[in-house]
Length: 313
Image 1: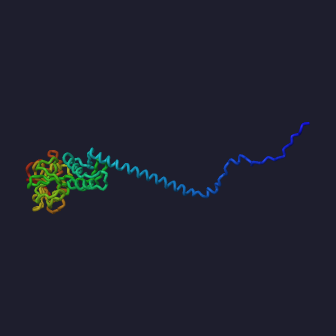
Image 2 (image 1 turned 90 degrees about the vertical axis):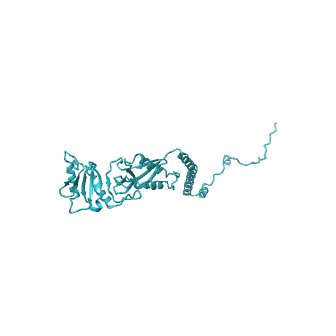
Image 3 (image 1 turned 120 degrees about the horizontal axis):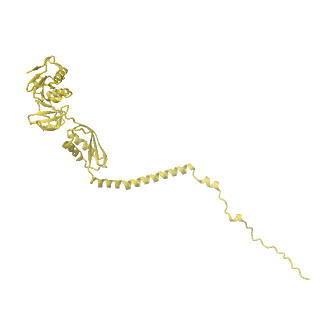
C-alpha cells in the first residue's frame, strides 16, 4: 500500500499586500494651494503694468534709434534742397525783380537747423521782410515743409507817385502817404499812377514813414474822390504848389489842361461849390458824346470849377 504523502502543516510567511492604488501618487490638497495664491485683481494689475512697461521700452528704443537717423537724414537732405518761399495772397504787381528780391531776403535768414523749434530763423524772416517796406503787417511765417516757407502778411499797396524835382525822381507812396522802397526817373514809371507835384517838403528819410505836409494829405483826399470815377485816367497829376498859401488844388489832365479844383474835399467853404457838385460837373463834360473829356476837349487852358458857374480861360 502506497504511503500517503503528508500535507505540510507549515504556513507560508506573508510578504505584504500589493494593489494598483499603491502606484498612484496621492492627490494634492488644492484648497490649500488656492488659499496661498494672490487675488485675481492683483494678477490682472500686474499684467497691465508689465504691458505698459514693455510698450514704453519699445517707444524709447524706437526714439533712441530713429531720431538720430532722422536728424542725420535732415542734415544730409539739407545740402541737396533749395528752400521755396510762398507769399500767400501775393498781389499781381509783386513780380519780376521785386518778387525775387523778397524771396531772397527771406531765404537769407534761414541759417539754422530746420528741425530745431527753438531756432530764430522764422522770426528773422518776418523782421527782414518788414524792413523791406513792402509789408504793412506780417501775421505769420510758417514752415510747411523742410523746403517750403509760407509768409502770411499784408502788402503795402502802391497808390500814387510824388514828384520831387530836387532829385529828379518820382517816389512811390501808399494810400496813407507812406514812402515805399521804390522810385522812378521822372516819367519812367511802368504803371500809370497819378502824380502829386509841387510838394513843399522833401521825402522822409526812411521807407515806411509818412510823407510830411498838409499839402500831401489834401492831395490824397482828392485822389480818393477822383480814382472812384470812370474818367480817372484823364487826370495825370494833382498840383499842390498853391495849397499852403491859397488852399488851392489843381488837376492836370493828360491833354495839358489845368482844372482849378480849389479846397480839399474835407475842407468846406461857403465860397466854393461842394465836392459832389464838382464831380458831377466834370462827369457831365465827360458824357458829352462829341468830347468824352473832363476838360471839354480843350488843350493848354485853365478850367475853374470852384464857383457855381464854371469858367474857362
